[in-house]
Image (cartoon, rainbow, N blue to C red):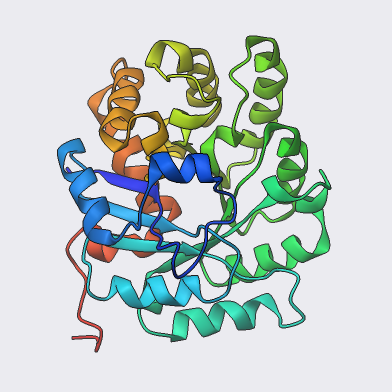
Length: 295
């Protein structure tokens, strides 16, 4: 059975600086990181395919990675970026990406709410227009949030039942047990909508402390109860996860958490959920893809 890393990055800071990265972080993570580097990290973890997720909010990254996907069969899909505040309609921006080289591997875009001070931004008109345009094109909207933005995320998701949403990184819980109940309440409220899934991802760097399955267990228990395995998917957040031990270490934590589930349920988290929420990855993952000319 294939295993899909639904959340990894690629970058070359000499070409496109990662503005979130401090010199201290850069010294640990390093780079540049190309598809060959991800493949080297993924193979010992048993990962067969990956979904690239955008790194910085610039318009040239997404078409560049879509074009790159043409020569890398393990790159099954791309979650890109568009400027949702642009005067150009979101649908036109999406169509330009889909019509470009490798465009059929666009499976969605991501909005970076984490970096917006307004806690209600996700429920505003700009994101709403993008969500509607994505739904009309059978594409998904990834949400990068912090826990205090979950209520706005829930309003957005409920307002667009025709669109698939994916919550990244469990909404970055603080790992402080005194915050568990509030986070759990808001996560369950979001999960009440059937058109949203959640990534078990990014957890190696939630709070800067070494991550273990035991530490993550209370938060995982809430997520698996709220979403079920059919709406939970694994993502490594590589190479950011190098800060916490890397892709193999991420997989070890995930496998320990999932061990009590049935094999069918584990396959959902590592494979099935991604196919449903990012259906554009299916041709590569299932081996049914034709060449770029359609043959």
